[in-house]
Image 1 (cartoon, rainbow, N blue to C red):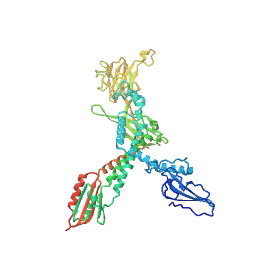
Image 2 (image 1 turned 180 degrees about the vertical axis):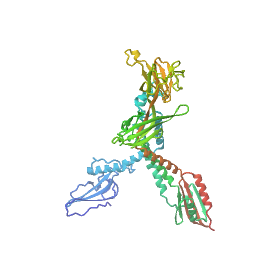
Image 3 (image 1 turned 90 degrees about the vertical axis):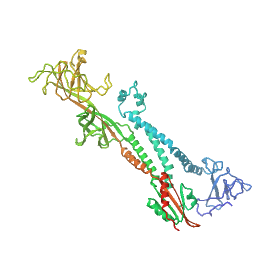
Image 4 (image 1 turned 120 degrees about the vertical axis):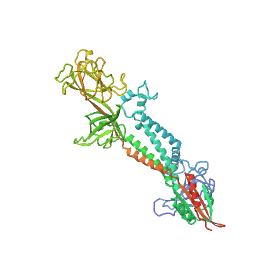
Length: 610
């Protein structure tokens, strides 16, 4: 019989509402029988739908909920039943209710649709997406693509100017047959780690790791951590390792396992022991370390600044001028307005003349009061850090050459003519004078001192490798354009020697800077006094670096812990025909042979009671 909960009439004019479940009525059944259907039952003055004692119903299979409402009137009572429809097919899955369907108030139908969407459809879709994202082949593919782009970013120099890529990746000589400057600039390969597609790959991998953690690793951890006693010997005997021992006791087994590092629990004649549970939790830590590393890399890409400067020795620059804003969320560092002064720049050479190491003596000066905040000599892999900005030593150039020039007719009392021969056209050769020409010592302060800027000639004309040059005009004020272009050319590959060429292109000789030995060329007596260098600095702000370091540290620790095997042992002691019988079963997720040997050794030590 159908139970209708109808409250007595109240004296108050308020509306009240009571809900109670009802028995289900099948369409066509008499009112009051059990089954499924949409029911409209009335008291006096209310709408009801009955035909010859039968109930009129909405489509078969509607789940019902009875709502009884009462009003302060002796002649008016209302009983109504609302329903949500299951899908056809009888599998119990509900379809989305139609908010505009007849048969019930629109507000209630809208609420039913909202509950269906939030409680059933969205969680179901979310689980489907999470299972797809947690796919191992998908995660491996994402790793490989990220590794490929990272390798490309290692091969292609990052954050250089467009002119640098045009010079070093020409169209007529592409690297690997396809990498030229249009390819690099069009696809953003000059700043791969901040490009949208690289950050999107990091996000996709993070989504896969998160989905795998919640759909696979956490359930495994919960099952492993939720230990329980087993009391059926048949269950133990079906495990990977099992044994039945007559006249043995579970208390002795518990003591032996405890000595081997197991956590042991005993309840009556039942026992459970495990060790290495951290090995089940460690994979979650591995995922957490990877997520922290990816998050740090993304944070550095989105919130970091970077740039490079070439600063001549003895000059200074503002820190903010060396930082290029390439990320949308990059904050300006507090030291952006402070000054960096290059006090000195030096290079160390190997015995064969190659560059061994180069150093920059830098001072950070407060822009407000001129006070020196920090002074440090940096080199490759030894940076300077100040206010969240890191300055790396990355490059060098020859900035200028200091020469002293006098005419050949210049005489001094101590001047002594010496005749020296050529030493060859190589800039690396020893000091020499022009063949057949006289060379005299130029007294200190004699002649005119000039500072000539050096230009980088690498890749220009027939020059190969790193080489710098400058030009000393002989008649810069001449009205003859040909004569005005005549002059002495000075070339250098490093700070050790300078090659000098006459105006007709002939080789004049080589001099070491600071040697004080003059050379005569085109009617001039010339001394190379000094060469000034420029230090190449790379400036970066990496707010995500602490995250990356923490992620790597956690990754190393949890990767080691994940190698630990999780071993479990159960035992049940029962009474047999000849006395007590101990049934033992165990399993391990890895190192199965070691677990088998360990369990056999433990069981062999169990005493028998006769």
